[in-house]
Image: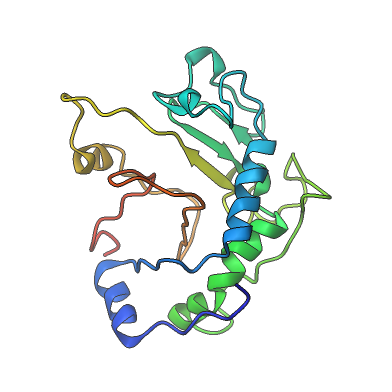
Length: 203
């Protein structure tokens, strides 16, 4: 999937201005998505989570297994989340998303207004402490925030509605930014996922 993406249409730009986001589908290289998943599991230090046993993914990380490296680069302190920030400069991940959508960023923000993605690690030359990253290492580099894994939850009759649960966890992050791109690198079931977007909340 080396072909360049078509420019955003006028309608998509208007949607972005109005709602604060644009949703695009089937734009990522499946091989790089697979490489990203491999890289995530290669960084697994959990005594509970097992790639080949999806039952271990459901209903969160046991409290005894909620740990983080001191620098926050491999963080499992959340009950249903795992943040692998050490991948922030990874070549495959940068090719997967930042370099892929870079022309759209320039289209929306202007040429020369976007930080050019730079590789600082690879599968053959990892950077587990994030020492080569540009920017605040605890938040990842200027290219990426790393790779975030949101584990599935079983829904019960008394579970809050998805929209209510998303509103309860809504937040902004402190680091300065103009534009963010997020992507799913695996199949996500209906009503699943780890990102909630509220139209107009950018205003």
